Image 1: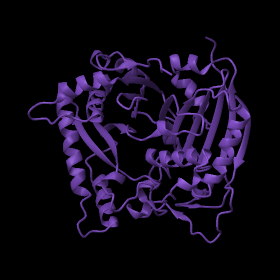
Image 2 (image 1 turned 90 degrees about the vertical axis):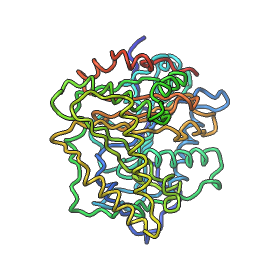
Image 3 (image 1 turned 30 degrees about the vertical axis):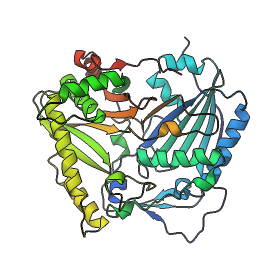
Length: 428
């Protein structure tokens, strides 16, 4: 097959369909928002052709519904100003593109992680502070389509991206009345940011000698892995705990640096953990990061599962608030992060973030559900794994980013390959 090439055929700015009131105060970043690296949270959604809807109709539906939903998500059409966002209706970027030398089915037989970057409306460089929202609709030769969605990580974690995506899709289907208004008050939990806080510099992101590869764990293999770990002293792990533990062991084993200690960083979505304080439509970086330090020794899967279960119990204790306020909880959580034993000068950190149970496969714009979904950040960060549900909701796809020399060892791990398949075909 020839190398696939994406051709940009159109680019425009989409503004909210109704003017945002000028007396709205700027949206304040929380301290967690502002320390996020300058990257976009991204999702790729692939759809097969609907013979009843033309490409022109599809693009028109996407653009008009995007304009309409931005009236409710108006900060996404704004611009960053220091530690705030001004809802000035400058708009979101919408790009149209096409691939003339490849059908969607051909691409999905062996998805090329490098080609995926061409399906995003951003370059493989550190993300600027604006625009906050970018979309690219790419049409394949067969009429199939990919939607690449990018939202600044300063404003949105993966759950926030999904909240917006579901609202946009409902609007495209003509169901805008069913869309609940989002809550953009992330300072409801974490303290407000200020200019004195150090913000990651752009040159810390994007200079990468790393590669991203996809590994798929089917349901039967996950069950086998869970059964292998469970015992009288270790409760049966969740799907995510078992897969995380195996990947973490293989990452540490594949590391070419045997001197520096290793740290596993695992973000946890706080919305369902504090439902009395956080709404399910809350937008922002509303997570808490647990750290597991494993020193220089080899990693044992069972011990890692025990540690992950212990961290989950500790988090449950941290979010108990009795008579306390949300700000008390947020300050307590952020204090735990600040006071952790992690040290960039001593530890190599690998982040495993779970997008499992985030309903990206429900994003129907009116021409059916996506046949495949992928997610990550752009530009890719080194030493990050993103776990996302397979289409059946039972398997897990792991998108692993490692330095090139470490990936060569990681992808050859016999223990990993006993449970995961490297980049299998996507069935549609």
